Every structure is written in C-alpha cells, then in structure tokens.
Image 1 (cartoon, protein in one colour):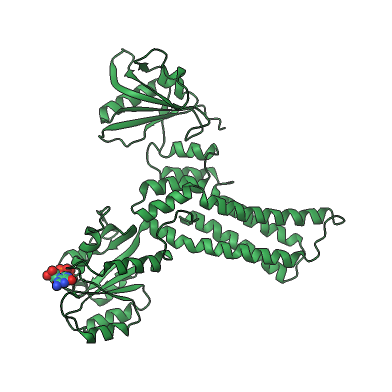
Image 2 (image 1 turned 90 degrees about the vertical axis):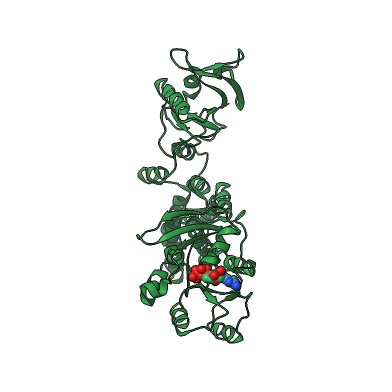
Length: 461
Ligand code: GDP
C-alpha cells in the first residue's frame, strides 16, 4: 500500500455537459470526505455505513445545507478498487456548474484536485497494474479504431507483462545457477552449461525479436497508417477517400497537420486506422503533382507508410504516372485501378502489372473491389491479424527501447559464450537484460519518468 495521506477528487467523465457526470474520489479520506456532504434518502445509507460495491441515493448539500444535486454514490473499499485505495464515485447530473460546485465542496472538505492520470498512477504505484498496463489505459481511451482498441485491451489484460515476466524468469534462473555454481562449485557443476545457456538464449533472442517486430504494429495502431493518396487529376482520389471514409466511417475528424497546408484525416477502415495525410491536395481538385511538382510531392510521400496511387483505368497510363511510380519503388504502394465500371484498357493492366506493386481493381462509383484492398492492408501492416486479443504488443518507444537494450545484453552473453569467456562474465549481462526488461513493466523506473508518463493522461483517469 502506498503512504499517500492525501485524497484526490476529479471529474472522471470529462468536464463537459452530459447526461450524467461521475466524480471520483480516492484515498484514505475518501469515505469521510463524501460522508460529510452526502445526505441519503434512507437512514442508514450514509457513506460510512455502506458496504463495499453498494450504492445509495440522496443529495449533496453544502455547508449551508443547500442542495447542490441529487446523486447516487457508490463505494469501493480498499483494496478492491481501481486505485487499491478507498474510492467513492458520485453520479451526479452532468452539468458543468453542478460538477464544479460539488468538486469545490469536496476540496473544502479535505480532498485535493487530482493531477492528470493520478488515479491510474496510484493504481500502478499500489501494484494494481504494471506500467505497460497503465500505459494501455490511455491507449484504450485514445484508440481511434477497433484494432487499436483491441491491442490496448490485450495490454490491459497483461499480455505484455506476462511475456516480459516469462523472459525475465528464464534470465534470473540462469543467473542464479551461475551464481550458485561459482559460490559452491562442489555441489553445482557448470559442465556443459555454456552450450545449454546459449541454446536457451537463442530462444529468448527469437522471442525478443518477435516482440520488437510488434513495435511497428503498435505505432501504426496508435498513430494510424500514414497514408498518402496520389494520382492525376480526376483519377478519383477524392471519390476513393469518400468510399474509405464514408462507408466504413467510424470516426472522421480533421486536425491540422504539421505543415500549414496539410490536413490529416483519421479514418477507421474495417477496423484499421488510416491517417490520411496531404488531403489538402485531394480536396482542391487541382492535382497535387502538377501544383507542387513531382519532386516536392515525392518528398511529402517520404512521410507516408503507405501510398495509394489512384489510376483512372479508362485512360492510358502516361509518363507522369510511370515516373512517380518508379520513384516510389522503395515505398509500400498499392495501386488502385479505379473506374473499372467503365471499359478499361488491357494495355494499362499490363503496364501496371510490370511495376511489381500490388494493384487492385476498384470502382469508387460502385464501391466495388474494396474488400480485397482491406485484406491487403491487414496483410501488409498487421501480419494479417484481425484483432490483438491475445497478443503481446510493444506499443510505444519507451517499451521498444528497453526491449532493444535487453536484446543487446542477451547478445553480449551469447558473444561471451562464443568467445569462451569465463561464466562470471555472463551474469552481468544477464542481469542487465533482466533489469532492462523490468523497465517495460515499470520496475525500478525513475520517479521523473513515471510522472512524465502519467502527465500525458487525461483528467480524472
Ligand atoms: P480526383 O481529382 O482524383 O480527386 O478525382 P475525383 O474523385 O474528383 O473524380 C473525378 C471524376 O471521376 C468525378 O466525376 C467522379 O465522379 C468520377 N469517378 C471517380 N471514381 C469513379 C469510378 O469508379 N467510376 C466512374 N465511372 N467514375 C468515377
């Protein structure tokens, strides 16, 4: 248990108008603080008398006995609560003034405003969840596609923690054996041990590499597949975008991009998050390529994970198309051969198939051919997965770095083995790998870093 003496309170549902608002209070004074302001409809239902996980109906009244709202309170006693502390939730009417007044009253009674992410930080510090799970809470809240949500949820279940613990378990057992043998050579023999250790480390290395491979998935899930839509005027760029955004629309928002002229559009396509960049060029009907020149548009394409190149199948493929597609050799390109509802040229098909890039026949007008495109996306970017329910995914750079460092240490041990170094050399690097893996789940993580991580959270979480 933590030694927090202070009790925190915040609106958990967002400080905006809504049907109801939930104010969450956590800490060892949570029950007396709410008890002082809550007046139950039925005697005996005072907060102090409520059993854990039970609710009561009544009013919140200020010092002058003026009723601020009719509410329901819910008590969750330590340690079976989100923070492992006593938690009281107040279900009030979701008006900004109502919530503000109740909060101010709670502050006067001894609670203090919670910092962003402080509830989850307490959950982490009190051992309710490890750091990778805590990070997934925010990923879940901010997930903008079904896939991103499923990956976050799988982390919240502890999939990454379990994998990390498993690897650490192996490393510590090897270290323990070496240490015992060095201390007590009569009873423990290291005969044949280096070979055995090497074989085990080879497996561990493979698992770490596999886990590192998921880091790209993690980034794309959080940030979306950065997608650029390119093609000549009238090829059907905006029509394709409309099909992607429209039919499968989950969330479509516009946010200002990094440069003045670019816009980014978030689309959830069949559960896959796409972050379409440079839609400014798509919106204005004039062609991006002609407007800013081939070189400049290629430069912009550098930022993209995926380039969708739209070709009008009813017109001949020309030099400009070919130049751009040539220049995009290094990129992940999908050619969408659009307008296949019109008569399309055999010749174009031939030219495109020579480019060694997947091309899919679609018709934005008839909305046909897109299922094949979605399948292709899953294969290109998410190893064909539909969801991440039982997968351990490395979801951010912090976790990725720790894992990379752990991998480097494992490789050092294997090098020492190959070089025929004495056994006591192994344990130092084994322990480093163990510690670096520990950073992922938040073991021995510096306080500053913990603060930085939770500061990114939203209020009331
Ligand atoms: P952009 O300039 O590349 O953004 O092209 P638009 O999306 O504005 O489309 C140009 C024209 O082609 C419009 O008149 C669309 O209605 C038409 N168009 C787009 N996609 C298709 C398609 O699949 N079939 C047909 N027949 N017309 C299409």
